[in-house]
Length: 185
Figure 1 (cartoon, helix red, strand yellow):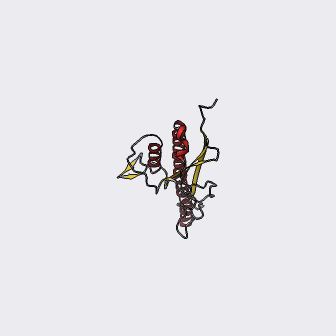
Figure 2 (cartoon, one colour):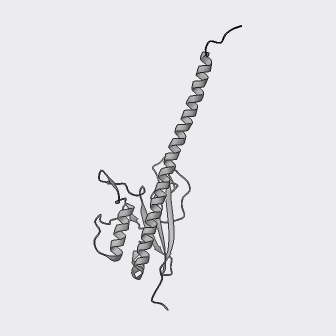
Figure 3 (cartoon, one colour):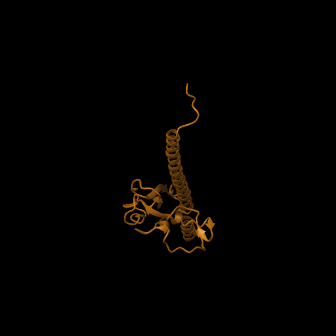
C-alpha cells in the first residue's frame, strides 16, 4: 500500500482560494456594518435635534409662529446664523438649533463633527397657527428612496455619475408639534 505523505499542491491552492473568497466576503460585511452604524448614528442625532427644537417651540408657545423658516429656507448647513448666540427667546433658540445642526457640540481640530453630514432643519406652519411640522434632513451614505419632506429638497444630489441623484441619499425625520393656547377656556 501507498502511504499518504502530504497534501497535493492542487488541494492547497483550492483551500487558499476558498479561504480568500471567505475573507473577502467578511471584509464586505464589515464595510456594510460600518455604513449601517454611521447611518444609525446620524438618525439618532437627527431625532435628538428634532426633540430639542420641539421642546424649544413648546416652551416659547407665545412666539411659536416666529420659529417658522421661510419657504425654501432652512437652518443649519449653509445658513447665516452666527456661531456665538446672544439674546433670548426665539432668536436664541433658532441660533442654538442651527449651530447644533452644524455639529458645533463636538469639534475635532476646529471642525464641527457633532451632528449629521450636511444637516438642515425646517419649521413649517400647518395652516392652523397652532400646529407645526419640524423636519431635520441630512446626507445619507447610500441611496434608498427620496423622502416626501420638502425640507432640503434638491440639496443632496451627488455629482454626475454617482448613485446619490434625485435626493436618493437625502434622509429626513419629522414630527408635528401642537402648541396649546393656555389662555383659552
